[in-house]
Length: 310
Length: 241
Image (cartoon, rainbow over all chains, first blue to last red; front, top):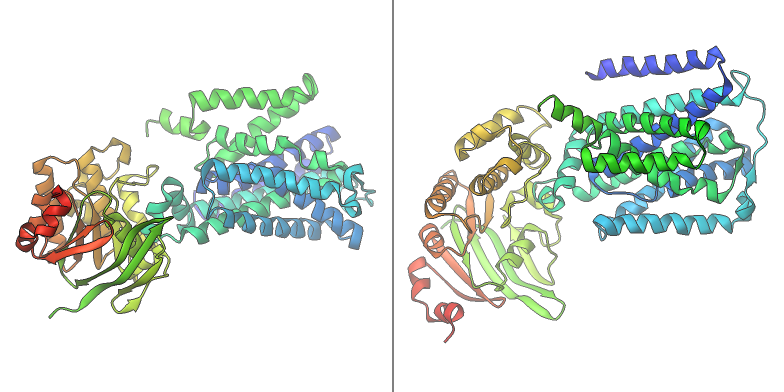
């Protein structure tokens, strides 16, 4: 599929999203759809670093929550509108991404992962003790009336459709560019990549920054979505688990993998939450992840490739 | 007299309290076949890690074509034309053999716009090296000698001026050693300067015009192959007294 074709599909998806929003079906569907789409953004963003560059980030909650809390800060301070929140949330998380990029100079493999997990804990502690954004009590947002569609559920759903499309398009163009090939080389062997002329540090910083940006973007609309944000919900470990599990299940080497993983797992979790119990949804992730790691370590896309005999 | 391509001047490198390289000086001339030998742990690989940029130095200077590259990142040195192969092959495992060559062609080979006709060039290199039939296989499907050849092919794709071959022949059979040697001779004829680090004396003595011997981080001898073989200090370093 050429870039032109991809753009047509992207526009079609956004158009479909707006159409869906206009249909005004059961409001819960928009609510659930938002979560699935949010995971498309998260899984895609995570995969730019974890899948393309091979640096496994356990600190997804830190980036997501930083996006959310940047939004809260801007709402408190300036009553900033949603587009500003999304952009600012992304930029602040991108800065954090750039910071952890420099960690990769010294930390590889599991040590990098542990450091990102620790980062999440540190940041959560800071937020708990920062009263301006609600501290441990949490922050309650009183939403103004929604500018389009008349309600926030459908509006946020539509916004998330757009964000997911943008994130996927960016991931896809990175994957197919010289940057993507360089990242693949450093994922396979960082030392050899550097010796073959790949500017590994610069590419890693690029990956951590872009990945951080979209994780922040995913978190920025969160206060509008839930209207009540507390540190334990924004820094929920579910985000770390899902961000890793979804690309692993879908396949980490291509842009479509995280999308497949997020849609499948995200939907399964929503169904499990409604039909069984809200606690069951992580169990679904766990079981599916174990099955995939054992039976199809290259995910669904890898499995498909193997079945096609390539 | 040929010009000096690589100049290593008083190079020192420590690992904690261990002095791996002690003020090592050596000059490699353009177009030369240069041998670097020494017992295990004498500092050969440390030396080329410093030259290729994988390790920082603790003292001394490295000049390439008269330019000070002592603190230059490794990938920039590669673009200047210093390319190494690894003792233990380090292929890009998720890529095919052809794609492995695409990385240096895209990133290192000078004056090349991204992506253009790289495939044709990679195919050419594979033909020269004798890996053409394996172009679309993953490295995991290669034999040991093919893996070494891939390592050399990938280094060639970076269009080196100076190729550092770090034990490219260790563990290969006699016929396979000749195979690799023939490739290196051919590269040298094309004007590529080669530093060969090798334990297989038959190979390194036949190949090198000039040999430098390292022992415990010190340069203990330099000369032609014949001179080195007769050098008592070298004999002592290898065999003891």
